[in-house]
Length: 423
Image (cartoon, rainbow, N blue to C red; front, side, top):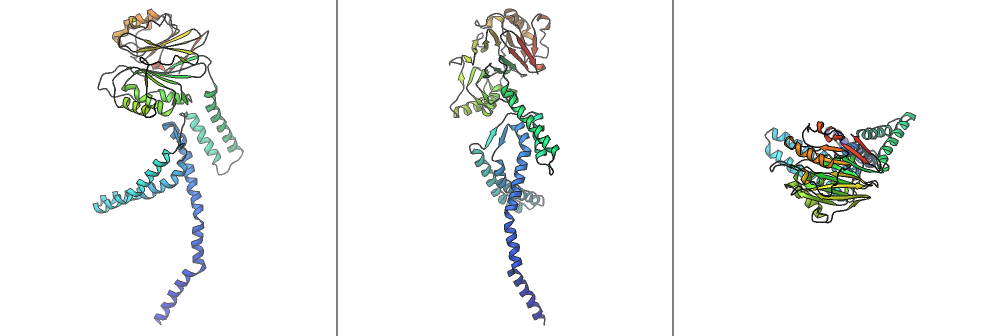
């Protein structure tokens, strides 16, 4: 009797496996695979769109293929490699070293596959797009647009919010590209050395930089304010990059510029102390067949649109100064040098330039700076770098002046007036 009772149970289990209900369940799970794929794709799209504004703000690059790459890379890394790594840590905490090594060896395979997939996708043309650094207002508008479009119930309020956010984004991106001052614009940024951008009336752009003198052994400077400012201005192309002095302190800044923007040409004047940043810059441009050219031994550009460019030699071993001329208005930009005297001024710099950009004097070189000002008598003076109080205020009667330490200074030289804007 016991045998007869057990046999029907086993037979019923076998029949259940062969029954249409069991097969129907398998078919249902197979049919749900596209549904799961759609859900995973939706998660990847939402994650990519949610992080895109912040990625653009911090890295100035937005991935185009990231949505597709995440479909394979995230399961490999987060679904396999990460749990195996956590299991290895737990095994090691329990003093099970062989088991920990086994989990680590097993987790290398999905981690390697995920890394290879990401590397392969990043090498494809158009895999990522370089974008200008968005402002916080633009980031807020992006998230407002995503929230309104992704709301579970969309009505007149959500559609109105999405429309306002979209119009604001379009206007904030298009306005800097459409607006042109129709004059010579020179902007000097707050930096230890000379950093700034000159824009011609036609919209041609010149980036100028000059590192302050420093002693050997000092670590090189960071990227500097130039890349961030160019992203804020929505620039895509820089027609010319001129380093009046090039050293370890500003080579990293130029490297960031040539990586993130389309630079028409890179020129350098006097060379200072070298280091890893210099070698990275030379290797990066050399691999692209656009190595930096010398302003002293080569033939530098003579114009930026309708603006005339002159690279004037200062005193012995003092480097080059940059002079911009348009419609009879002149701007003279002097790089940071040690002990600049009136006798070191270039012969091509005539009296009374409309704009003089000068390094703020140190405590022991105030008399030399006063002699330079007496020689030139500029219409407008912009001081950069140096000490907090250069001590020139009592001696600058009749000369309007600004300091970049108080904010970036933009000067607009038109045919009949000079306007100043300090950010």
